Image 1 (cartoon, rainbow, N blue to C red):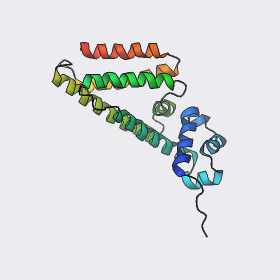
Image 2 (cartoon, rainbow, N blue to C red):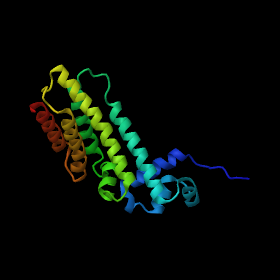
Image 3 (cartoon, one colour):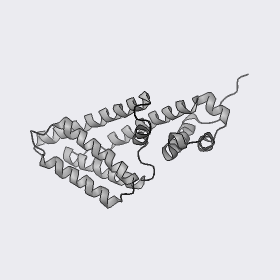
Image 4 (cartoon, rainbow, N blue to C red):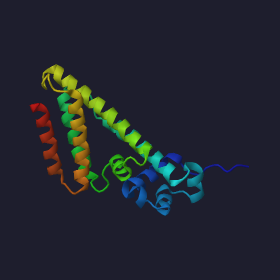
Length: 194
């Protein structure tokens, strides 16, 4: 008779995600993962495979949740420029609150570089999704006359995404909320001046 799992897989994965996000891949010991996941060693290996597989599944989950959170902040605001301001404000607040952990996606990308193709692919996928959304908002702002008609929306979207990533890294390096807000304000002024 086969044993049934006596734990919630999603809750265990959320525990692993939290450990990897806090400690990074190298810093997350198996004992840390087991404690965070609240499961036994054999259950972890039977359900998730090795540490690398568990990390990649955690990272995929993080990217899905992060993208969903990003898109959820669109709301019903009719002004695309205000939505862009809102994104920067949200990242400023979130980066200041999570400064010790930073962004799990950025952390993984900088830790692995191009050595882990799946990590690189996840980072590129997220960048494409977010930059496409930002470019759409920029095009809408151009159509309303809020931004210059000559502004290259693709380049501007890449600039804003790099700014969002930079806010996260600056916060991780100790920048406070006021410093981050200053960077966000400058980015919006730069965008409007182009």
